[in-house]
Image (tube, rainbow, N blue to C red; front, side, top):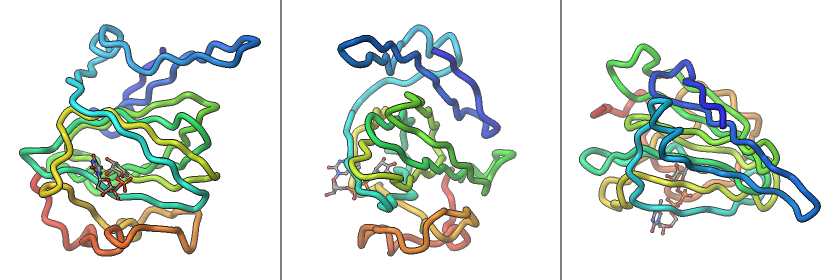
Length: 178
Ligand SMILES: Cc1cn([C@H]2C[C@H](O)[C@@H](COP(=O)(O)OP(=O)(O)O[C@H]3O[C@@H](C)C(=O)[C@@H](O)[C@H]3O)O2)c(=O)[nH]c1=O
């Protein structure tokens, strides 16, 4: 397991070893000690997953304080372009976004701290995204920023998005509490 801090402080790329044999594959997605040795502390409270068709775009999501949380995300099957946006006002990378491909094949995961908005574009059918979070879902604090409002160059013109995701504030309208 190789863990690298990204250019956004507190965001980490986790590259897990994938063991293959005649039966298929094996991937370890969380190891408390290795994570903590690399500066990642997450008390797991919930786990969930979504399944998306090609060109589905979900995001950009986060929970507001006091229900904000750390998030460990990975793609167990298929592939996605995972995109995250720094909305921490005191961060040197505030307002910046970056994208990383996650797939069942590359077995990468991302650790995202509080104050990072998260979304992804599904690059193929049956892309399964798994999340482990440090607080439980709080519908009253579940919040978002419009996917097309912060300058990220998504490689899709007409993504499939939820009704909720069309209604988020734009990045410039949003007054970040982080
Ligand atoms: C996120 C979530 C949703 N739900 C419900 C609400 C709704 O009825 C249904 C689908 O929710 P959504 O449309 O918000 O699902 P989705 O758009 O897939 O939400 C996810 O998007 C990505 C980008 C993230 O980063 C995740 O943290 C999460 O916000 O599931 C829960 O019960 N618990 C949860 O933790």
